[in-house]
Image 1: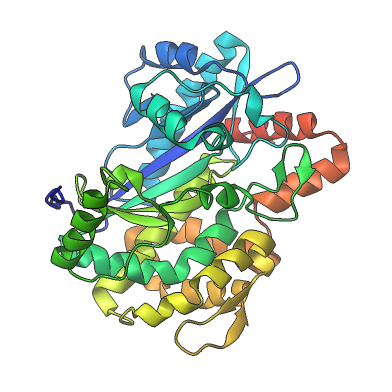
Image 2 (image 1 turned 30 degrees about the vertical axis):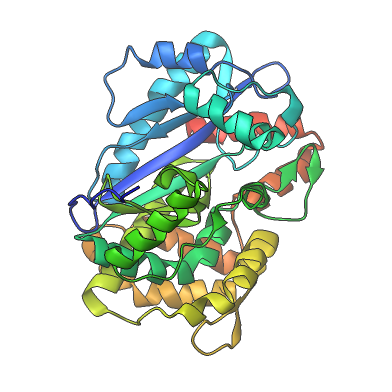
Length: 373
C-alpha cells in the first residue's frame, strides 16, 4: 500500500482535539450518553466538529484550522458552552482529565461504529481500557520533509508536554503515584511509542510500505505513536497530552507547541539525531511518573537536569516567538506552573486530600470545565 501524499497546510497553523468525559450527576461515574449528546450538539452551528469516541461515555471535540492559541481558545470555548447546555438538558456533566478517577473498565460499552467494533475485535479488553482522555495538537507544516524534521525535533519535548498536561493520577479508584497514568494504557498497544527516525518522506514511505505489506497496519490511523504525521491534513499530530481540566490550559498548551515550532522553523536550533532516542523512554517515564518533579536527561549532553528547570529554559528560548504569535499569556501561565510544580494532577490530588471522596473531585472538576471554581 502506498503512503498518501502529504497535503499542503499553512506553516504553524493549529488544530486541537479534546477527548472528554460524560458523567452522571448522581455519583459522578461515567455515563453512556454520547449518542444523546451528539444529537443535541447537531443543533448548534459550531466551528470544528463533535464526534463519538471508543466507548459511549466519551466524546471528542475539535477546532477547525486556527492560526493562534487565542483562536483555539475562542473555538474551544464556543464548543464547550454548547456542550454544557446540552449536558444540562440531559442532567449529566462534562469533565476534563486524562482518566476518570474511579470508573470500572468492564462496565464500558463500545460505541457502535464499524472502526470501533473492529478495534474491539482486535484488541479485546484493551479497547474498553482505552476509556482514557487525551488532547491532540496538530501543527501545520509546509511540506512532508519539514514535517518529519519538525516531528523529531518535537520529540525532545515530549516530557515537557506530558508534565505540563498531566491530569490522570487516579485509576480504578486508586492513586497510581503517576501524574499521567493514561499513557501507560497507550503503551499497551503494539504500534505505540515513537516514530521511526526518517527525515525524508520517501524513506518514511518505504517504512510504511513494508509495514502495510506485513499486514501489521492498514493505514496511518493504526500507528499510536506519541507524534505521528497526518498527511491528509499536512500536519504532525502530538498525542501525549492528557486532556486538561480547562479549555484555557488546552489553548495554552497549543500556544506552547506553536511557539516551539516557530523557533524550530526560524532559528533551526539543532538537528535531531537517532541518538536522541537513547534517553527518550526514560525521559517519558520520568514525566509520566513524577510530572514537573521529573528528571530530564538532555539528549545532546547526556546530563540530567530537573525537568521544570529545562521547561523554564525552553520558555526563555521561545519567548520572542510566543510574543509574535500572541501566545505569551498562555505560555507565561505554563511557566508559572513549572516554577511552582503545579499541574492538574496536583490539583486533583489536593482536592481529594481535602474532600476525601473521588466523586466530589469529579464534581469539582466538572465545575472547572464550566469555567467555575
